[in-house]
Image (tube, rainbow, N blue to C red; front, side, top):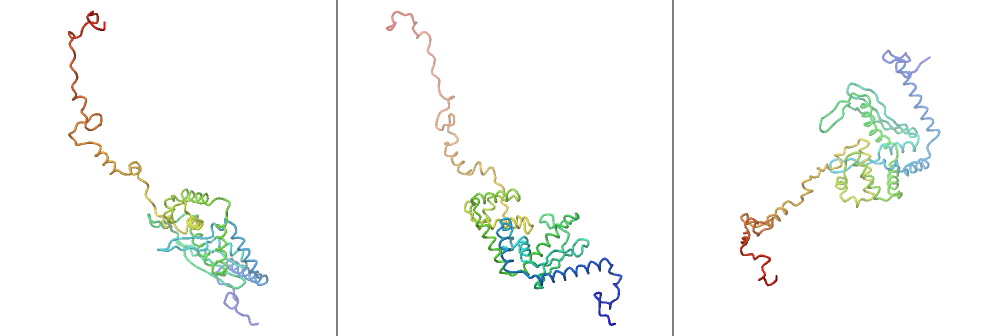
Length: 324
């Protein structure tokens, strides 16, 4: 009997010693799971109309719409696009898509990671293999090595989420993505449960409490006073907030850090004018003054009247007085 080549590629021989039995079992199990998922996807194909409606309905939720877009600066322009949360929601509702992040290997100082998205129905696959150094870059202190396993996990998950988003968006039709973005913007613009001024004030308070971004910094970023902010400006600020919260960018990438106000400038905003008034209020330096009033003679320079001698004052009982 002529035996064909087995899955091990060695003419039906047993697995080599380099791969353990446990490894072979894991590989075989994963292969069977993928084959079963592809068979189910072919037997139960997606209804694109229903999938599209589910995506639009998900984008009508305000919680998803607020985190649907990211934005970060690149040179003189700003890059914006769907966030990982919106990409995951679209993949879940589009159906028959296998996606995820796998850490292939962790060496000393870096991790090899693979992000993938596989449309099991059309057999369209997007895969990105990349390395994540176990360091955290800072502007002041340089690169800080990561030793805590939790810090390493969070760094790998953060970097992997960006590649996963690109993979998911690569297997979903572009027109569906554009429609989802438009629906999220309509959801944010059409909510009239509270006045726009209150919403803007709440957003400004959140920026200052969580990231130290003051109202003047927001006004400089938008280009107008906070009283003139529109819904589009509010959507833009929420995109910035999502980017900051997801670690896509830093505070300094968006806002110009204004110096604190000087107290002396606030108490005396016009020092030159005050000095000029002081000079005009008095005459020359040699002129005598009295109680701060220019042009008067001091009290010490005035002559006191001489006292009347007693012999010139008649006695009160003198009968010759006319008014006695």
